[in-house]
Image (cartoon, rainbow, N blue to C red; front, side):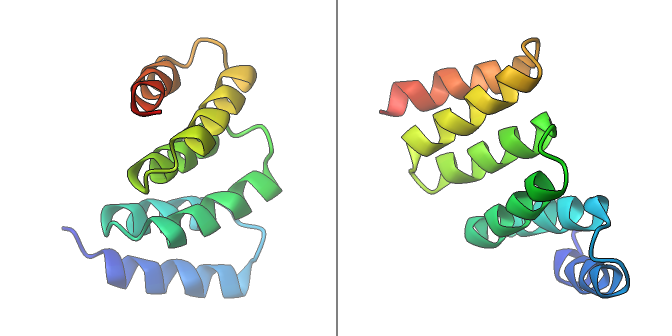
Length: 103
């Protein structure tokens, strides 16, 4: 329904109740991403990675947010980390190829 602002408020309340609930940070990041607020998305992906350093999805998505901000080399580093965790992560491979074209 594209109610991202409302969802963010709900995720923030969830985090107040349990600041280790990874899915709240992850979904909050996705909402910020949908609003093109990449800095806030990155902050939340950072928290997901802090809580779960093996989250290939968080690295890939954080890389994509950096890519959208024009931070292509940083994006490639995140894609590489996602691929280190999951060498068969096709989306990270494709995203990395696009970022490399922009460097």
